[in-house]
Length: 370
Image 1: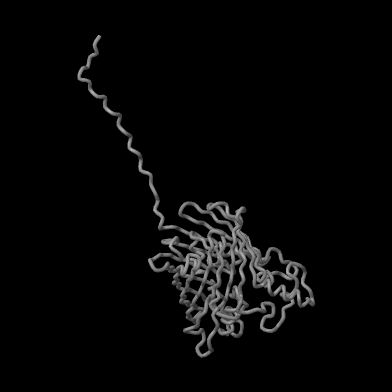
Image 2: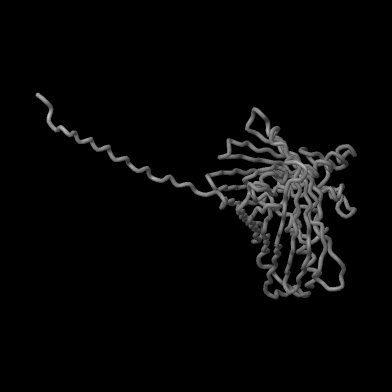
């Protein structure tokens, strides 16, 4: 019975990929509130002040992030919690980040094969992350890599694995354009939950994204393509689900046309988002994730499923981010991120010394001639 519970638990905690296809799915959680506001996958904007995004894309690491700290917290569903933290330090040859990702799933009910309650058990995942990035050939081409040591524990079962991120990025600051290609979570398990049951898959994904800020508008458009490792996201394990097929925004069709199904499946690989940037002080973001909407919406009431929103506030050396992501009509997620710049020195103005009035020269002749 314990094996069945573990299997169901792994399926239900799946996030970005099709449920049950891999383990350590928490590695796909949004790295920051800004990423969550952009549909959960946002790693192609080159921002010298946002160290939180570098956890998802190590090619972003550069000298401007020296001594930056990022901390993010997400109270998730069913009593679970996700958090991450990272510190960036720049050396002469490259810029490094050191961080951790943590997921706690709260208390789970335990039952025996007869349905008798056996109390509760805990489950959690943690990963230690070390990454490095630098520019090559020119300032426009940037490359980076992450190494992750992940550990998972469910009741008395545990697993350990290694995962790697490889990222490349093109940045043209003059045209406010950036693009990135990332191969995420390529790895293997060093220890499985159940001995002798074979290797579970890591949540490997290939992602491509572009970001463009308009010249005369305070607006940036972001387009992300993800889940390149599997084209068909509608047909789950060879069985079609009537609730997952149909038009993009309209009512579900009982027998959708092939062209509509193709368009629906293609849109599941794309996230469209945007950000309004009011200088460096304040920003507003939004996005639409079609895959999330089709997977989690109610058949007769979709609501805002698949839409996400966010805001950011930058005050001197502090960057505060918030996001609201709608998963289903019955549930949403709020994420908070705090970025601190410890490298920039606080400049204190020294009080200016008041100049003493010049002493009047004593005249040798103190009296004037009458």
